[in-house]
Length: 88
Image (cartoon, rainbow, N blue to C red; front, side):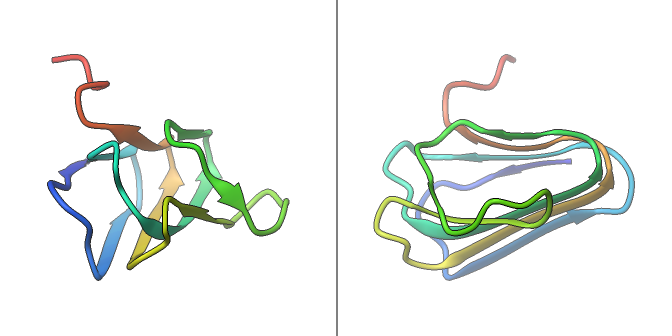
């Protein structure tokens, strides 16, 4: 699943029961982010201030932290990447 975000959001919930989830957002994104993957990796392409270190979910803040982005998959990789970083 691929979700493209053009601006900051109040709330985004990207959830896939199976398969990878990629959220592509602008470099100046500001959001609280929670990522979780049942079996797979987590790839964060943004500087993130992590609130606590544990396997899942990984809570943190990107930029000034406005809004909430939740990315979750049961099996697959979770990615939060900057616009332009996605290969076409």
